Image (cartoon, rainbow, N blue to C red; front, side, top):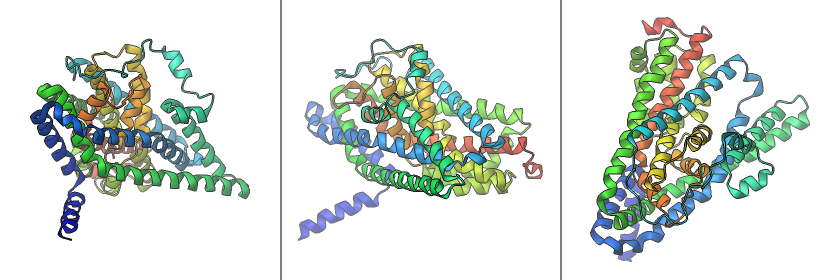
Length: 428
Ligand code: ASP
């Protein structure tokens, strides 16, 4: 009896501690155990492999359902001048964000020189396809085959079309068609919510999996991995800072707005994003700040901010750009220019499909890796490198969520200014 109480207490302690704290402790413990025990620590490897399998299991359905729901939530009639401008702004800044990430990764080369052991089965595709082929390949000839094979770009393309189709149906004058459209929407919405629930459960297991993955990495590779990991973290944060200052600064200036004034007024939402690691959870604060501090009219922000929290993720895009390069470097294989262009395309789309919840970007990273032929299968160098990133994901997630939310607000004030819907008196 006392034994069952004891185990209950332990479980209670486990689930009662914040996920971030658990993962960080697991990372440190895993590194310590891996270094102390050496090859013996490999006994825990299956626990880490289990986490990788669970994550890979969830990635296709999460992407599919959340993109269908995201695309069908935007009503075609609202895609007027504001919608088109906004989506153009969101997409361009996201593509720029991946580029900034790649630039910093090319410059600082995180992970280079650290050739992880166990490269079997994780080689990059020998002859990368040309850009034209990559673009053509985005269109699936058979969507079911794309889903079954986990071809992410094709899945995204089809899911977006399906979402737009559903939203057009839902708005139809014919009641038969509109109720059919709404029914499909409900099914996909339920599917998406169920996938988020499963993701949450997987994340509850993540600390144990991370412990095992990190212990295995350190037992096989020794302490030589700590430096490159710190380098990856530094590169990601430097790119965050550069994007914030250069891209957001220039955009605001181009619209005659003071960047410093913006950051001062927006800081409450930025801090909330940093600590919650969720764009969706920050949304109420983002809206309040946009109305009260930034002087944006409700008509604008009630459309731009929810859409931004769903599809506009500059921080996530930067993180994906840097981390793909990190994983490739750890495998001792540099990415070619055309592969990096593929990364810009996939990471832009991946960040659109990333849910605004903690840790979602790390799952989507799997698909960006996939697009350049890196498969994170158990026992490979790619898996070891991915595990290292996963161990410090919460620290990266804080910064990327902050940038995600900041990008939404920059887009919002810029569109509001362009539409004459910005209350200038709030900026005095
Ligand atoms: N946590 C991020 C957000 O909510 C998404 C991510 O994991 O990249 O914006």
